Structure formats: C-alpha cells, structure tokens
Amino acid sequence: MSDLQIGLIALGVLLILLVLGFNWWQDRRVRRKMQSHFPTSEQDPLLGAGTAGAAASATAAGASRREPGMGGDAPRAQPGQPAPVDPGSDADDTEEPDPACEVVIEINFAEPVRGADLLPYMQSLRHVGRKPMRVFAETDQRRHRARVHAGESYASMQLAVLLANRSGPLTAIEWSQAWARAQDMAERFDATIEGPDQQAVLEQGARLDDTCAALDIQVGLTLLLGAAQPAAEVLSVARDTGFVADGNRLAWPAENGVTRFTLSRADGAAFDAGMGGVERLYLLLDVPCAPADTRAFGRMVDVGRDLAARLRAELVDDQGKPLADGSETVIDERLQVLFEQLEQAGLPAGSERAQRVFA
Image 1 (cartoon, helix red, strand yellow):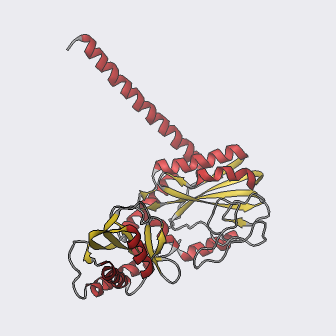
Image 2 (image 1 turned 90 degrees about the vertical axis):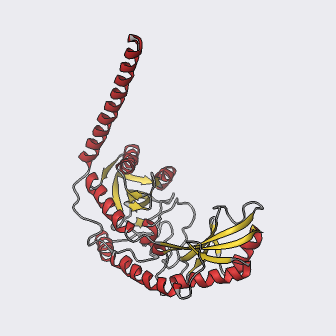
Image 3 (image 1 turned 30 degrees about the vertical axis):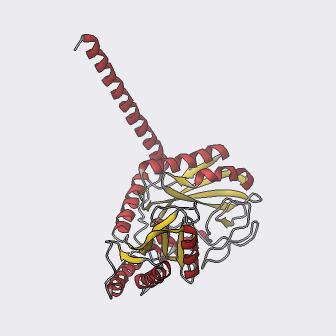
C-alpha cells in the first residue's frame, strides 16, 4: 500500500471522527439547553394518575377538555362522549390531557394570540416521530378548549405528547422534536414554555411501554376462500353480515361504536381497490382495543363461521388448522383474565386510553 493510500485512509478516518465528535457535542448542547428549561417532575403518571388522578387534575384546573382538531368547522362528538362546545361558548370543552399516558408542555403567551394566527401551525403539532400530539388551549376568557378556533384568542396552549404506543416508548429524539416545536411557537408568539425533566419523561415512557407490552394480545382467524372471488362480491357479503367500513379494513362495531374485531384482505389492499380477486381474509381481535366481552373471541368465531358459509370458505386458526370444538370457550376464559389485568393497569379494554397507547 502506497504512502498516498495510507494518507487518504487516515484522512477519511479523521473526518469520520470529526463528524462523530461534532454530533456528540451538538447533542450535549441541545440536552443541556432542554434541561435548563425543564423543572423536575417526580410524579409518575402510571402511579396514582389513573381515572381518579385525571379527575383531580380537572378539578385543580377548573375545567376539562375534549379531543383537539384543526378548528374552522364544528367539532363532532365521539361515540359515548358529550358534544364539544361551540366557538365562543362560555362552557369548557370536556377532554383534557391524560396524565397516565401523556406528558404536557405548557406554552404561555405574553399577550393573547388570535386563533386565526395559530391555526397555520396546528398541522406541525400532530405528530413527533411515531408519537401523536394533542393540542389544548385556554382562551383569554379562561375557557378551556380542545380545538383552536379562528374567532377566539388564547392565553396559553398545552402540547400533550403520547408517552408510548406500539412503536415503543417516547424516545429522546421524539421528545426533543416536541420541545423544539414548542420553542418555535414561543419564539413566534412571544411566549414562555415549561415542561417536565427529560429523563423523567423517558423513564415514564419506558415504564408505560413495559406495562403495555405485557398486555398486548391479538387473536386472529383466517378465511380460506379457495378460488379467488371478486373483491366487490366479498365486500357485499361482509356488509350484509354486519361489517362497516374502517379504512382499508372492515370493522364489526359494538353497541357504543367501538370496534370489536376487524376483517381485512390478506394482501392489505382495500376491498374496493381494483378488480382483483380475494383468496384469503383475516379476522383480528385486537384485545386491548376491543370492549371487554365475555364472548369476545366466541363472537368473532360466530361471525367467521357465518362468513365462511356465505363465501364457501374454510375458517382456520392462526396455525392454519380448523377450529376445535369448544376452543372459543377456552380462549374466552383466558381473555377474561387479560381484560381484568388491563383494568387493573388503568387501561380498560376498548377505552380511549387503551386505544391511544395500543395504536
């Protein structure tokens, strides 16, 4: 190897070390800057911050809030939830950040800011990485909102960041992104920001993720249609059976509108996509996201057998074997234990909190 080649290799290694060193220095600078803004928080949202904790927080704040949105159009009520108030109403919205699964960054404006000026920035506050954010605000009349309305002015905003979901716990990068967006809002609208200590946030996210991982169960069945059947015909049969549209999937809803289980094509395509045939369908019971039911699995088996008869298909388990007689009863008994564990963990099956973290 010539001296020139050795010199070039040494120069390349030196450049790599310089880049790594710069990234390390920049990361430490950002962390120190964030730490200097965060007060210490010793409260664990998983301990003593369940339903009772959320109610206490609502009382202390003097109000609660509802699901946020982009503003402009009238908000729609969710199944089982009271309708949100109209813009300018003296009533408060009824939903607030959930301390059991979300962490909040406070943005306090020096002077009230018009909602019309804030709305263009709402899109950037929907997600950080793979974690959704919700936006809450307080008007200059001390009314709590879960939506920013163009015709109101706001004294403060709250960014509620999810601590964990099926993508894993909140990461340092995601939290840094959330803080950076809050800081950007503060700089644009002359505001101060407050939030919990980063290390405490990451530890809370890790604990919530550990809890959820131990309770995250999905149970599936497969419908083997044999020869490919037209997707339009399969969709028509499924709708006649009782399924409703849910994105690319179909959902079997409970009385309160919450999905009990879903039906999807094996290729993941929408049922109305193209003219291709369907040879295989999947039924899926997402246990934490479905409402607690003594026959959660048995109900799906009943619907699966009905579909199989209508589509001239074979219903098999996730191992590709026909269902054994009485197997649904055994599985339902096991699921009751899981439903109880979810309840004890503060994550009732089918609840908004469960659907948030098991997404």
